[in-house]
Image 1: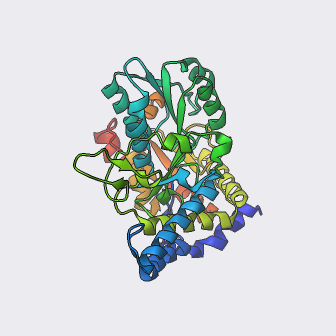
Image 2 (image 1 turned 120 degrees about the vertical axis):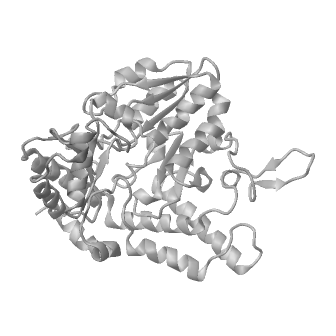
Image 3 (image 1 turned 30 degrees about the vertical axis):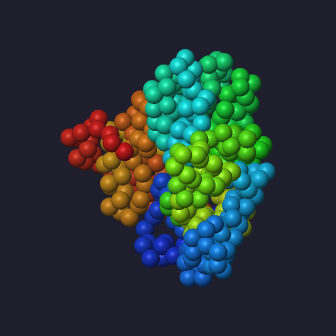
Length: 417
């Protein structure tokens, strides 16, 4: 028995919702459940420390500010960043990407310039750049991907040049779990002077991330995909680049002084980019989530992921008419996407839901990538530290009785998620 098989047995009890709801939850790439340590951190903050940060000259204000900045320091350590002020708290990955696109993109990109993305991006790492290109007169270039969902490195390199000012790529595909050679791609882009943003939403839950080793200019992720609360995320940026970001939102906590006539004097980052009241409890709970994951051990989590992905691929391949998309077993990262011949993904998802199994079905906010694959959508099973082989078995057993339903017969080509 591998170490991977022992990990869930030790941690399932840490997640209260699993005991409360039952069933089989395989939609972790969308959002993960929260361990008791994270729930306790939220409760503890609101019951012992609650106050606004950076403004109140009283004990609770100081305690809340200390907790918030401690969380920032914890995130810095988890990502391997040099300085705490290279960590900006955001509302999530989408907010972080938009912050860079609007705050720096408009300064770097103009008519005749180009922004380069890959062909497998989530809409949150595509639409902000498309809008930037449309509104500045720049071109949006798309690096090719193969049928396994891998970025064509040669094709990526061929698109680089002096016109490309910004590059945006995913560390891990949210559709197929493909792990991209980010360090290599970043190095290629830097040779041509481009600034690189990496969407790490699907990477941080499954592998250690060292932003300095990757040499990413910006790296972002969401708390809710790594066992933390919804509504909070992180934008890491190299200090000198964060300093160039124009604040997209302005308000309390971002300025040294304001008058009706004098130029506005903004405070340094990260406060300059965190206008208004931040989600202090969310930041504290995110730090608790990263500590929880670190406590399990990244090696143990990696082995667990690899075991479940390869087990799922093997079990699914035993079913007639079921095809795994891509090659998730090559570099497992917690995601297995598949299709069932002749049956719409929504019908498959509905069938599994009726048997207490939660998966994600559709285009996963990446319709351009599904177009490249020639698919209406896929069914995505995604794993977390609390999943077991029995969860895979439950899904595989239920698939044995799936039949065409409403979507297959009435709307075979319809997609919306």
